[in-house]
Length: 411
Image 1: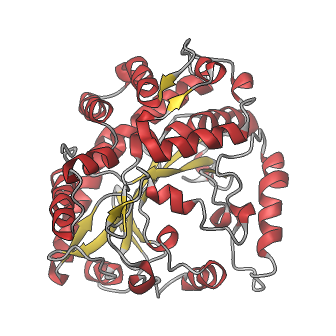
Image 2: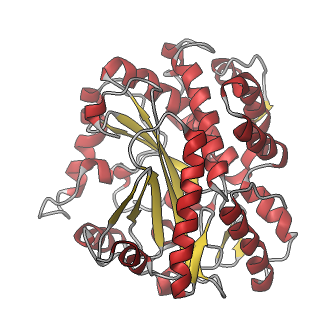
Image 3: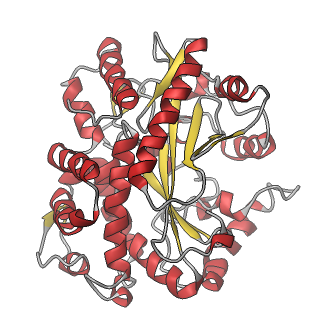
């Protein structure tokens, strides 16, 4: 999202969705995104402009990112645009015996053996990351996410938006967790991607902080409390000065003052663009109400302890909607007058309030997700306790069909 656009709160949105490229026969990862881009453009590039949707590379050569090509106010239409591009890409990948696979993590990838860094434009940044952190683990080489970008203008709008996102962030994985399997086995976490992501920057923990952002309310305070420590920590490793503060900030939601937006980064990729865009709609409408003070005073929203929010987040990435909020003050900030409530029930309550502002297709998708659980829960039910490679291939082929047909996965 461009800073020049000067978009005010909730005027438009940006959405980015990452997909794995895998072999059509075995579903093993295939590092051929550079060939995909070359086939489409006729030359080697790292970014593709395809009208409403742009394509770009990520850290590894088996992940492609699709994103709205600039802000949009119409995520219902964006879901269809994403799907059309999925169809185009799958057709091109077919030449190489490959295809796209959705979900937050590949279920049996061996990142130590199979990870291939992007070797083209901007590879110097990826090489430095690999030198510092060793990117051969799941937290770097095997994670696919959706990023939701929300605009703001000035400190007052930033403060309201950042405060609302920070408050709601721990609950989001109950909707989006889609990575219950790593190394061919259930991990015990519905959002294994986030579990390993938490440890990516253990060598320089200031880059991630507590994952839940600090309660900052202005660009100057963000610079002092977040950016300055990050740049000080990276300086001994980045002697050439090639790293950017925005690229280094690994919190669950990051401020992009250069773009006038906050980027939410903790959403696992879903089974199809309809699901990703539908969840984004619910998040947007919930955050809109919070930022407007419809459910509680924005000043009160900023008083919730960061460590308490982190502990709730950890419970949710493990248990999803079955995690229980046992904090009456927190629930009241969401407009819920209860002493305790499962996270799934919290989201149902918020959806009931917001449904009138959401299109019919998205409402139907959200009703299924809320009724049957996040994608990780549905994957585990489809596996039914059987994690043999053949069973995993069967279930993940069904996920691939959900992607190509743009339909929500039902176990």
